[in-house]
Length: 568
Image (cartoon, rainbow, N blue to C red):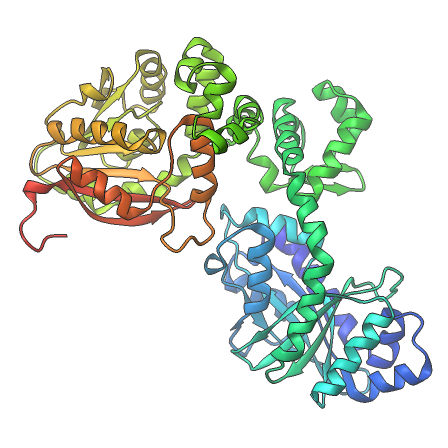
């Protein structure tokens, strides 16, 4: 059992003991100080204490079963989907709800008078190394989903409205809710009053049946109360970017530990900072889940560890780039929106490729930041085009066009010893790529070609354009694709890695990157049908596309002449 889940198991045991010992008549006055005898009787007569809830993050189902058994809780019933908590998590962490398989278990326990109630256990499985680790760290620190719940036993709409009014009169505020069709029940969440003494910040009223009419009023109150706060958080987003950049620039993550806390004084001395200002920065980052505040100081979370300089696929270069030159040029977004011109060019007087080429330290930072997003590449080594080339007779060649430091090509060559590679790049980039691939023992299987897009080498079996086309306007993209098409044999394949804009305008990192590319680079993100047209103009046909991590996609194209009628 992991250390983090051991903490979850302890919380699970404490919650089970709490549920066994409490009842509505003792809890309600603690939750709603100021209740008079008449109001308390009205509530106690119409609802019962049903459960206390918590959200846990087991590494696997077996660990969850063991933790439940250790608390004397049964796990016989299969877990059900939890729509409400799933959607709340997705909204808080800006994730696609479909990625979050939140489940709910309700193991029964007996109350002090023998009455039945439950411990409500929300679970999201987070295996070691999962990209959900950051969510788990933040949720453990903030305990957003921990709450007490009361079930209304006679769900009359008039009674329900009256109970909501009593809660509001004593300082409880609407905090969301929803209807769960899987169990035909409606949930009303409240934030507990500031003077509540029950030890929980949230309260749930659970009502069997569909009461979305009453829920609509409740949710309107929630939205009205949170609109200004939500907008204020959005307006201060620049503060977050700079806080992360300074955190990375000072190498604070490298000086912190994930297992124990470090005091602000000692930390400030280690990184060369003012203790009080550093502590203020860390308290802010604790709200974002990058550190936690412990009795012995500040502790680094898994999310914060991604900014360590020596972390695998470290995201420190991205923090420095987005908090540095691209942060400055994003201040010219208004110019881009008004004129359609590139904000970076307007601010610096030249495009970012030329600017970085004249500043080697920025060029190196840019190349390292591109490598920081390489987790997008993980599934590409198993792409059918790559595995088919690897399994074909003889040796086959993968050509990575403008492949940066060779991170993607290196992954493919390492996974498929029968493949060789060709890396086309600018001369100063090739030097770093050669060192990297030589260090990985792959240099003997890779040829290096200095040049531009016009120099795409012929005769390859698989060609790759990874995060290239989004740098350019449509006409330049057509030129690049035509250079590839001319170099490709009739039976070759082209893999294009990009963030593809969703056809339905659903939430996606591609939408944010589209704005970034227009302001800072002069390119744009595109929909799949847009790529289809660009490929067709170059004599290529889009065969299909598949999702990648970090909202990426891989598009598969072939020379149009190579496709028989009905192919693709």
